[in-house]
Each structure stands twice: as structure tokens, then as C-alpha cells.
Length: 166
Image (cartoon, rainbow, N blue to C red; front, top):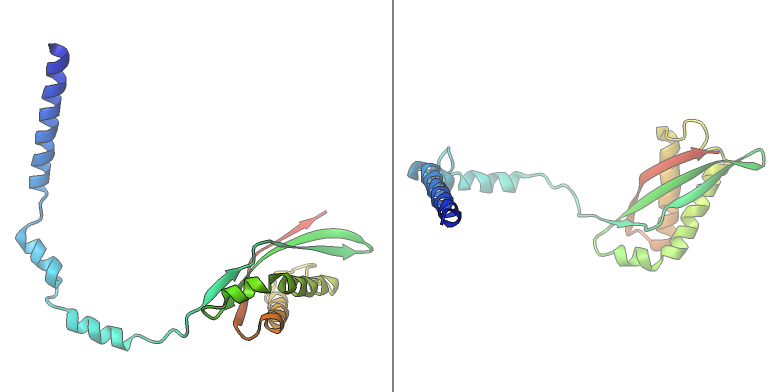
């Protein structure tokens, strides 16, 4: 009998406490009215004016993430001194992502050749993340992407770059 009585009493007490807390924390009618109109009164007219005055942030963009990373050897004195690993995204106009993936093998080949050329002129040596080095690499990659895909590509984004010295 005690085994049934104690859980039943605890259930009733818990239910009563929950109902009491719900009634105590129920919002007042004044709070509900503020939710409908806002604390400063009816502001729907102000929002319409603000929405009309918002600046144009330019055309929408989509990002095509190239699935595999690029691995570039850095050769010094005839031997591999380091490996650089890059991950890229391409910023494209909306609806162009399919074009990127359709041309991905040719695109990857061209981008990889640009990265090899960049490594061969010392672009991944020393302070390789310096702004001018990264800008030069991005510009070359962008020109190659545009030559393969066309003007649908608006920018090349370097998402990750890692150099591992041997």
C-alpha cells in the first residue's frame, strides 16, 4: 500500500506545483498589449520607412566549396622542404554552382598549376601569409577560375592554409 501511496502523493504535489507556477508566471494583460503594439506604441509605420531606407548590399552571392584540398610541395635545393595544404571556395553569382562542379576537374588542374607556379617563385616561403603574397595568389587563382568557368566567378576565398615543414 505504501508503495502506491507515496508515488501518488508525489504526483499530485508535483502537478499542483506546476499548475501554481504556471498561474504565477502568466503574463499580465498589460504585457500582452505591449507585445502587440511594442513599448513605444504602434511602430509598424516606422518599420516600413526603415525598410525602404535600408542600403542595397549588392547582388546575392553563392559559394561553391571545392571538395578536396590542394596539396602543394615546396621544393628547395632539389628536395621537398615543406608541404602546403589549401582549401578554397569560389564566390559565384546565384545559380552558377552547378557550372563550377561540372568543370571541376579542369578547374582544379588550372588552380593547382597556379599554386605550383606560386610555390616555385617562393610564394610559400618565409612570411607566405603576408597580404601582398595572398593577394597575388588570389588574383592568379581568380583569373584561372574565370578562364575556365567565365565571369560567373566573382572571387576566390582561401578558407584554410597550412604549411608543414619537413
